[in-house]
Length: 117
Image 1 (cartoon, rainbow, N blue to C red):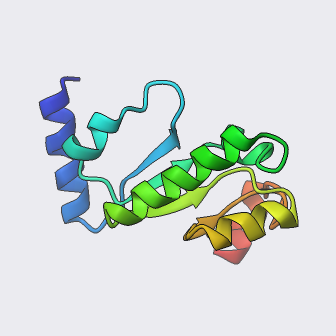
Image 2 (spheres, rainbow, N blue to C red):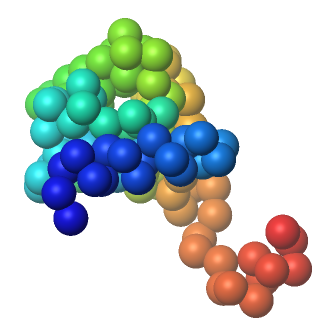
């Protein structure tokens, strides 16, 4: 699929009320240029930056920068892989909107999800 077709499809999805997120932001193929081109609502801060937030200064600064960038662009930010209270505290202090990870819940089976939702 070409970039123009993808952007058109994403705009159509947004028209129907679907939020668009960039997953694993800061790793792999994610690029700052996507922030200008794509009609996104949210960045998902990759767990690799969250995992060693306390032990590695670079990770904490990258996580902080992604939150700051998201806020500047009026995007939501989700942190992946939150497993410890100190990670949660750090993320809350740095404007993280949402968090997911073992600290809150282990993955749920489809059967359980259907019962609750």
